[in-house]
Length: 334
Length: 290
Image (cartoon, rainbow over all chains, first blue to last red; front, side, top):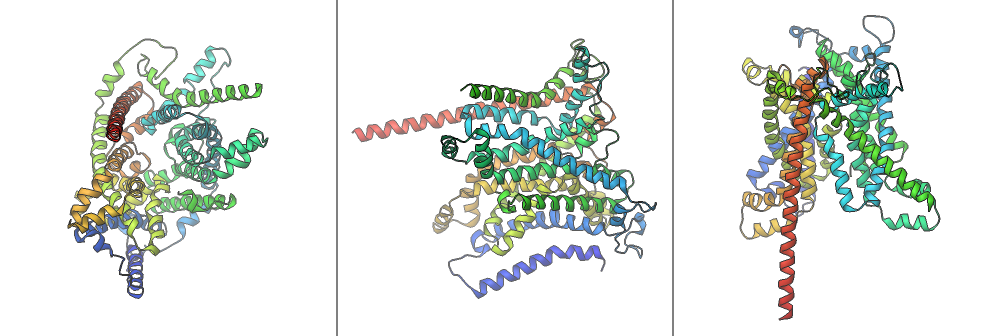
């Protein structure tokens, strides 16, 4: 049995273990008032539910992920050699991330690409947090319902246009022949156009713009439930406005901060459109590296390994941050 | 007091900047759609034209992509809404020790980068469908893979929408119907589904839109086929033409029309509910008076 076939069995084994545990438990501590799944839903519906959920969870989610991970432990082969005697498990793809297989030196290109993607994503997260917090606070605590409705509409409206066109429209603003440059030149402020795209300003603006809502709505949700009396009390006791935010509002809304930041960070690190259309010509984004392995080098195992590295590093970083700011994962998903 | 007016002026300025940031690109794009130069240019405005709209209409690749996007969108809705509903019901009933794992697995596609979902979909299904020539010829197409890849994370959106609504469902209704002799499918069709109707509508709209404008997953899973978004991406990469701005203008207008009708319908509904409540109140009062 090949490693790929074994992988396919894994989700089924997990399900079998859970099912056996459930069976054992009901037999051991039988509670007559509790109905079984089929008693509650009826046979036909129960089976339909199980079939639908099973198809999704096992076939659409778990199996492809596991399969991709297994693929990353295989060598790069021609399609005809797949599954042959050379197709053994190997760490070669992961080693290639640290050391170029063809050369002797370290694979600095790809390591820099990953480091840059992560750093830029963190920067974008911080930028979005700073520009979204005042508005989220206003919506949650200060504004009247009518005005909040208007603001929400204003926030959502630009996102009806799809992602690619949004990036395109930002390029119209930021390109060397774009609006900002032509206005600045016409006003006589600068003589030759500024290369915003080459300086990666476009990249940061594009990422920040793309994930504004992902930051603002979790913040708003968290801030909304804060009792106004707490703020009043702090004010009555003579706290200046910045102390109120630092000591009352921000500690309260920490789970919202955590979920907003987690999502913006994960989405930015996995973004493809913004770096492709707004990144500078010398900027290598890690997802673009993966993209190239699939579409230019046709090296799927190496692309899979890189994808897995990206996912693992991102999750590790998010966990570290949550630990650092003392937020539990359960709180963020609320 | 003076610092307070200063603060609120600062805040007003911030709000202005925020929305300028949000809307500037869209407005600029709208202007370029009507300007004559070949390169999308907002300033200087050289002359009004509708040429880019006709050019857009005659763009074969774009129209084909649009058609594919619709087909994939409908398939994704047909797949994800039932899955999401079933998954949310299972969430409330699943064996409690497995619930944490189940939640983690169902929610994971939302946090996984779309690129990775696309890649894993292609790698997995390529091998699965290569078992014989017939399955490969019938199913190994970009349209099928894109639908499956998108469904894997859009189902999670739907599930979350249904879970929010299901949390407010009173199980006593279900018990009562069963005690009165209704069968399980009857309870499902006549009690649960009507209760879930608002969530169903929301899920359908969100699933379709999420599918329609997905790029990260689709660009991998679509293989040799195309959707509107992948065609657009190709064109933006090659260079820029005002026809793209024209498309943006069309999308914005359609959304505006949609949003306005939604708002009007909602207001009317609210007014009707309000009137009904008013009527009930006066009726009650007159009854008490009698």
